Image 1: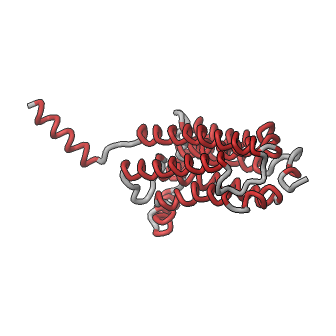
Image 2: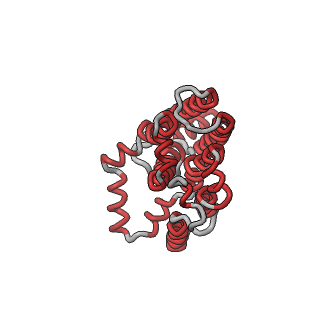
Image 3: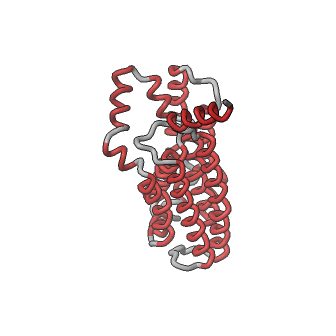
Length: 261
């Protein structure tokens, strides 16, 4: 029995943390007066996807079949982060904190560290690059043999997925958020990287995966089509949440007024 399999039958430690996160978010939503609307539902949906990935049939499938592992990582690293980010938890926190603490948090978000982390290239390297390292190096072998390392990989994919979704389409404030064109370009690179990695996985080239060929090819198909779906949803979120810069809106308004006259 591997360290990964040893977790089956026990209550995953992530569940209490997920319940705590949901309770904290709902408390903030009530304090901020923002309970109504779809954002709490998106945040709760993101947590539900994480819970579904680490418990029940998906977790059991992932422990014995590489295709289940890929579904698990698709939920944790791509679909759940989109729901969590669209829930705008930072906005909830800023609205509910006392003014002095909210100003401190806002200064932290404007700091150099936040600028470096919130860079789209940084987010791309951590999310997509992490996936390449996992499947193209011995890391996957070690993760399946060590339960603690397997959990670390899960946490990494969840956090890096949230970072990438926030940088690309998150409604929460971000320092010096790049233009829509730049973010779409980074998203295009991520799509190309996922596509390339899934094709290499399908062919069994440049990957280090000690799994049967049938499972490897099935997982590659899940990565290819599931990744496309998740990235399409992220692109739709970017377009849906995009608002023109105030100066651009004024130019459009003046141009429209002049044309009408």
